[in-house]
Length: 284
Image 1: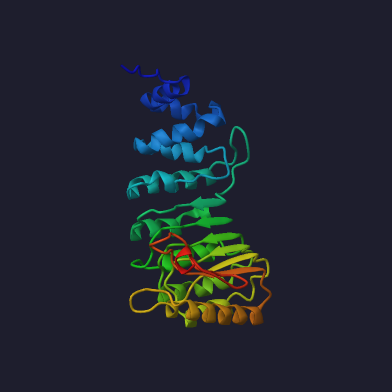
Image 2: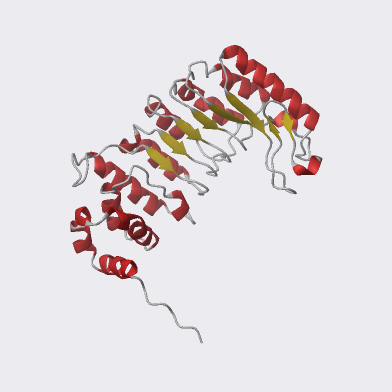
């Protein structure tokens, strides 16, 4: 017969705080920073909306990754996080430090709605973002213009942009081009696993002449590399990747650039073109 371990002091403290939200909210400034992540997780999963707002407004760390907590779409909790971030701007000082706008926003593998995307673009606390990670947030069925508005707001500060697995289409990327053109501080971009053709990728590259600080660029294999059964043609992949790499090299200097197919359903790897073609295991 197994004996259940007693709850830790940290767990007991968190349970006590969540049972007495009013007291807890008034004493957030006195809580040790080390307690914030676990307390935030419990408050978020328990849907303590007002407490989540106050915690975000008092968050003592520069990064608040919420994507992992959103196992199911929940606009109410996402809005609570954004409201809390906006509250940070109305408070000049924190009991430990000067308050600043959010620098990192990571929402990954989350089934986002149009309302969610609209909320992100309207948030006044995201105008100095340095890192935007939307990996796995499928955008193909959404109006992309709110994301364009957000990119326009953060064009002077954004350094890393991860849109991997967003399944965007040519028309959506075309809508983002005017904003991407002005993101001149980018150092890393990832567009893997989006549905782009050769013409739109060339159009994108023409808009990156100002990306003088870029170090790592990751682009999807163009749609022309696949047959009607979504199988990749290795010869076509190598040919088009080389052509696109040459196109970009004429526009500006490149450092670390690669093109990659979707992940192989058999071996779980990609074919990658970077200084030559590296095939997935199935081709060996």
